[in-house]
Image (tube, rainbow, N blue to C red; front, side, top):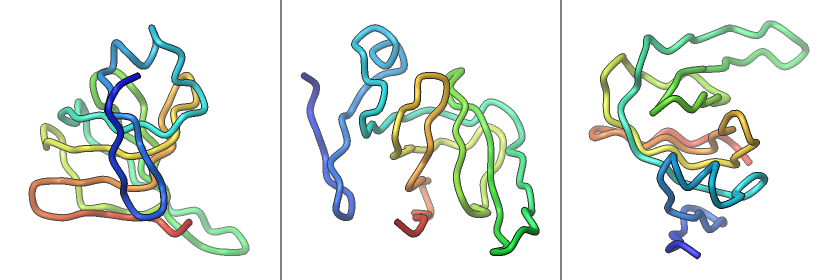
Length: 104
């Protein structure tokens, strides 16, 4: 198994994008690094509890984050979250200048 690191109350496996698909990390907490491929989409969700959702891709993997982080195309990020097979539901995003964390 790859190395793990702790952020908050959870441990995350440090993996590459190739390892995500090849080694069966579906449903596990993972951390990947890379650059944002396209402009992040920030959506306002005006439901009972208003909020924001950010969606972007890192190394071909779709990342969804509950919040409105200040990110841009080409920016280096480290994404912490649960791998769902086709995307990562991020609980934290680390950039060179800031760390964005959602409520658990």
